[in-house]
Length: 138
Image 1 (cartoon, rainbow, N blue to C red):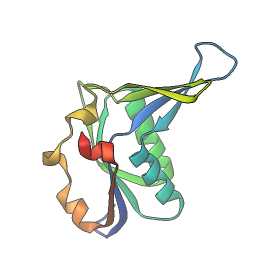
Image 2 (cartoon, helix red, strand yellow):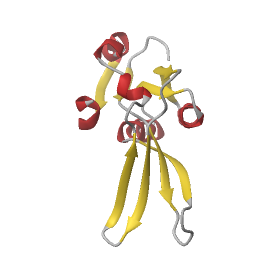
Image 3 (cartoon, rainbow, N blue to C red):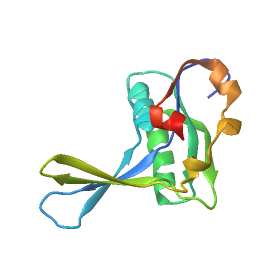
């Protein structure tokens, strides 16, 4: 994006999602998760100028997020690529009590992201800055 104002800047951890498919034991379908990434995509789909800040691994899941954001019109210029830490993942299974989530994000690229990495110039241009509670905690 140029130096123009942006409508929303989402800051957080995008998570690759493996969702169990019904009827086939051990089969999972890949998708994109992470509430802050979902928010940026939803905002862009509604016509907002959306940007994302965070970190991805240099891996297939990270590249898939870059492709998603490019397709959806989300500016990912403030997303760093971590050469030695993976993109965070989670698995969703479907049990009798509903969805069961298992996270594989310890040591993820985004877990290395901190206040020093925040894009202050981009934050200053944003009308809204969105971060989830877990994003603020980590």
